[in-house]
Amino acid sequence: MSAMDEPAEQSSEHGIRVDVETSFVPEQSDPAKPRYVFSYTITIRNEGAAPARLLTRHWIITDANGNVQEVRGDGVVGEQPYLKPGQGFRYSSGVGIETPVGVMQGSYQMVADDGRHFDAPIAPFRLAIPGVLH
Image (cartoon, rainbow, N blue to C red; front, side, top):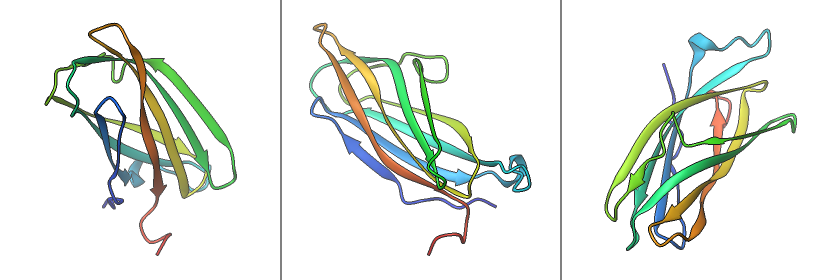
């Protein structure tokens, strides 16, 4: 039993598009702790004219109590995908927060073939257990 949120999408001026789908993971969650676990699937597409590599990620995760977690790291799921124009990369990961509702946003730090570094923004997307929001 999982609920899909509305997909969020964002395109940077360099043509990197990020689409997000989320779902609640009840079997890993424990409201008594409190711990609510959500999975998210990200699709990164290069809709620009130049190839680029994803170097690092930066996430800002905020729960309904205003607690903020920041996560920085190399690549995604152990990879630094290289995307030629028209190519995409899809991966899934997860996050735990202390409330049944939260928000994630962030950016991927990219480098184009010409050496230019740029950020591909990830628009805020909601984490919510089914039925908690109308």
